Length: 121
Image (cartoon, rainbow, N blue to C red):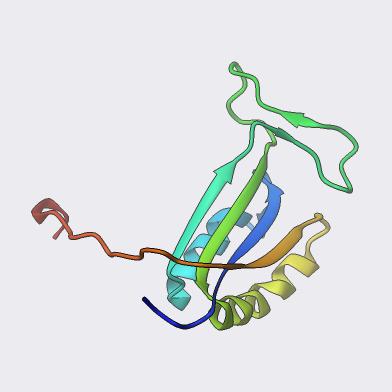
């Protein structure tokens, strides 16, 4: 098992937040891939609010394109995640939107890359 310190970086935002013409979560995922971050997942919430919200956002089965809370979760070494956050921090600060970003230690019990299927080659 690896001995380096690992963490999870979480960015709490809204599904409609944008950086220029790109959705925030797309920007973060593609930038993380470019920088070699081990893994990223975007979760869409069904209900929530932030400190600057004037209302609670909620999911309804008949509305597919509404503003919903999201969490962007990145896992890698603490050093990689701290460096990555420094790269995107100015993008987050430039917008008028509110964000919450956390960095928490995590113990990785298993990290095994899968094998590509022949159709993926």
